[in-house]
Structure formats: structure tokens, C-alpha cells
Length: 220
View 1 (cartoon, rainbow, N blue to C red):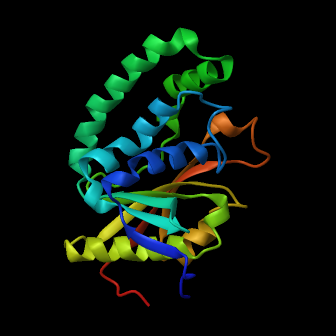
View 2 (cartoon, rainbow, N blue to C red):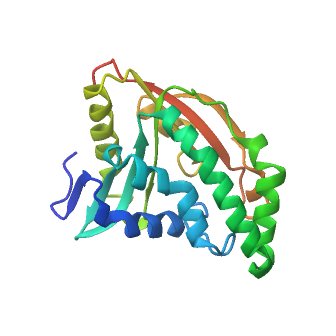
């Protein structure tokens, strides 16, 4: 299906950095703003986007609607490089978060407690040496058919660099990005684990799901 005339999918550029960070925070609470759960938008955006925007920007794409960035796909085909970056990045963010801890509200402190106590238990298995990605699109842009276009462009980019497979880790629940949706995009679910921090904030179980797609098969 063709994109509307006012929708454009293109490679990420440095000028998109602020928009990507804002969008990350604006959709961080199950598609809604993260602020009621975690108030420090700077740390939240650093954790989820800074590697992709600052270290490997060539592997990402954005969705523009009426001249504004309303979606992104952040990818990496250098997993070892990213894992090494994350070791130092996470240590830096931990120190900053602890320095600011006394200023945070109770909801943010509860979020931090979950990170320290449970988050590492709730990460599903994922291939350590495979290209990967994640994406976010604002609710008003989800009906513009841009997500599949971004994914297809990213998969073509990976093929051009000799990658044979890709995985994504996505927040899923039955009314949003369920396993059947991933399968329609040609993915196979590898593992999913419930994210317990959402149990009292969402009416249905919420999972972090790892799904893998083989790239050597031609797109239909």
C-alpha cells in the first residue's frame, strides 16, 4: 500500500535527535508519555536512544508526517559494539540517577526500585551477535502504513551489508503488537517475558518479546 503524499520515510539525520528523544519519552508508557512513571526524561531518552543517535546513526530511519518526525526505527548491525557501549553508558546513567535520586517523586523511585530488583530478570533471551532494532510511532501516525515501510527499508539496508537475520525486542500485549502481528511481518517469536512493573497500571499482561526474522528470504 502506497504511503500518503504527506508521509515520508527517510534515513535518520543529526537534526532529528531532539525529535527522536522527545518521541521516545512521549510513547514510553505503553504508547503514552513516560512522565507518570519516570520523570527524568533525559535519562530515559539516553538509555533507549543515545547509542543509535550518537554512535551508529547510519542504521536508523524516521517517519515524517506533514514535515514533523512522528516515528522512528532505531537499529544496529554492530551488536558487540553496542553491548560494550552499554556497559559504560549504563554505569554513567546509574551514577547520574543516584545523584538525582533525592529529587525524584515516589513514582520515579518505584520505577528505579523495579529496575534494580526485577528488570534484569524480565529480559527475554536474544541473539548476542545479530542485528536488531526497535521502533516507536506516535498514535496519530500509526494508521499511515509507515511502520512496514521503515522496516522494509531497514531490512534492505541490512541485506546490503550482508546480514542474514535480524531481531527485535518489542513491548507487546494482545491489543497492541501481539505475537500474531509480528508473525505477519515474517518474524518468529523466540521468547517473551512479562514486565511486572505494568501489572497495576494496565488491565492485561504486558510482555517484552524477542522475535527473529531471516533476511535471506526475498520479501514478497
